[in-house]
Structure formats: structure tokens, C-alpha cells
Length: 198
Length: 198
Image 1 (cartoon, each protein chain N blue to C red):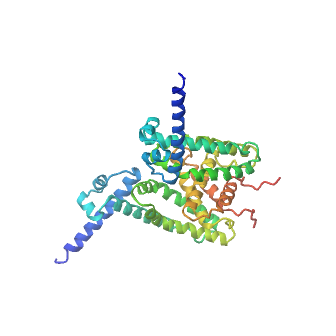
Image 2: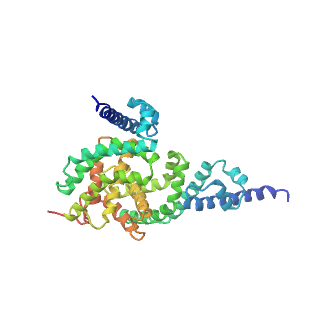
Image 3: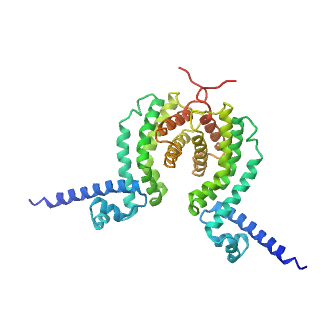
């Protein structure tokens, strides 16, 4: 058939790109310094093919990060962040983000070495907005404090989350206490200064 | 006099070292990438003299960091960390450490690029122990929570402190709100989960 070659080539390209992004996620999560050659080998494609899609290591790391964030976003879509009572929604967000961020922590480490800070911030933006929205909703509902800037509460959220990941990594927090520590810490931080009773 | 040369040479060496450490603190705080040549020029010593005392950039950055931490420690010695009621002591520690850490923040940035992580951790140890001791005292007194590991509370303290410094740097926290935000955040984090009344 006359029209076969173009779609076939396109399908091949799509398969290669998917394989490269999956291999990149796997390898860069395990070792932030993984090389382009390692990723091509793991994906089962030639280096020329890889460079055809991603002209530099920076472009590749950027695409892998985007891919990983989209996957993570898919997981986060499922929860009740926008409907559950804010403290419960925060607990749910932490428990789900924790797993996702733990999985992709090393990926952000790789990105940290390969990409400019502003690019990393852009990639972080979707989860950032989700956290912002939840904190705003909790403040309106009177469940979260309003005596500190909401931007600061978002920053503290990510600082606490990344610290917990590092502490786990260093063996100073046990895997089975991380979630409880995270949830307890963040809810203490967000609670209004005067105890609210229903 | 026969014994003059040796003490004179020693006094000269001491003066050079002091000048190098002060110049290093000043330059590396302003620009974490400041070169050894820049620091020698600022200190008014030759590069040969500088390398005679500090054989590598790493050795120099390490000595500058040690010098800065000792200076900071001198400031911290003055407060009532070990005697005031723990929440007040925490507020005092934050207000004093905040200033010191803000001054030396960029120095740690320089160190971060030039020294291995374990070396930086060693240099951090004195302030770390001070925070640990205060948190332990607050837990014993019933002023601070005991439902989270004390090691985690120490980690959270530094994570919050460094985040506030970064937020100030990025223009997302105003200089006049940093202390209030830090104190409020840390005391909320440390307060026992059930409200205590005297």
C-alpha cells in the first residue's frame, strides 16, 4: 500500500521515543549520572536514533522529567484533593505524593545537575498548583491557618517532603514511619494557631 | 636578638592566615565561585604565600567555613539557649541563628560546590548539637512534642530555616517577615499535639 511507509515510520518513532523515555526514567532514577549511551542501550535503540529525537543530554533529561511528572499527575488525578475536607485531602495528597516523589526523587536529582533551575520549577508547577489550591481551600474553610503567607506554607510543604525523603535515604527515618511523620508534621504546621473545635 | 626571627616569622604567618580567612569569608559570601587568586589579592598576600598555608582551593574553603562557624558559635554562646524556657530559647535561637545563617548562607553554598557532603556535615555539627540539646530539653519539660522522633524535629528545623533563607533570596518573603514566619512555623511544629495549658 502506498500510504504504509509514513505511518509505519511514525509508529516506529513513537515506539522508540516511548522506549527511550521509559529507559531514561528507570536509569536516571537509579543513577542521576547515567549517560545517553547507557539509556540508548537500555532502550534498545541506536545512539543516532536517540540523538535524532533528543539532540542533547539536557533535552533528554528534560523530556524524561516531563514524562515522569505526567505519570505522577495521572496518579494524583485519582484522589479527592478538591472535594474531601482539607485536612483529609492533605493527608491523601501527602500519602500519594510521597510515593510518587520518592520514586522520582533521584530523577529530580539528575535534573538538578542537567537543567537550569527555572526549567525544573516549570516541571514542578503542576503539583505546586495542586498544593496551592488545597491550601487556599483549607484556609477558606477555616481548617488551615491564615497567619502565615500561603506561599510560605507551600514552600514548607515541599521542604518537609524532600527532607523526609533525604532522611529515609540516609537511614535516619524508617520506611514505615515516613508517612506518619509527614502527615503529622504537615497537619501541625497547617493547623490554625488557636485550637478549633466543631 | 638571636630568637627574634622565628617568632617574627610566626607572627607574620598568623597575620597572613587571619587576613586570608577574613578575605575568604567576605569574598566567598558574596560570590561562591570566588577564585584563590581573588582571595589572595583581597587579603594582600601572594598566591605562593596563600598556597603555603592552604595547598588547594578545597583546603581554603574548608578553613574559611571552619572560621565562619567558629565566629557564629561565638555569637550563639551569648544567648540563653540552655537556661530560658524552651519555647523562648527556641525563639532566641532562631532569631540569632537566622542572622548568622543568613550571613553565612552563601558560604555554605561555596562549600557545597567545593567540599564533600560529610565534611559539610562535620562543620554543621556544633550548631546541630545545640539544636538537638534544646529540643531534648523542651521534650523533657513537656513544652515540645514527643510523638515525632527528635532527630526528625532537628532536620525539620534546618529545612525550614534554609527554605526561609531561599524564599528571602527569591523575593518571596520580605526581609521584615522572615523572623516572624520562622518563629511561628517552628513553634507550631514543636508544640505538643494536645494543647497544653498551665
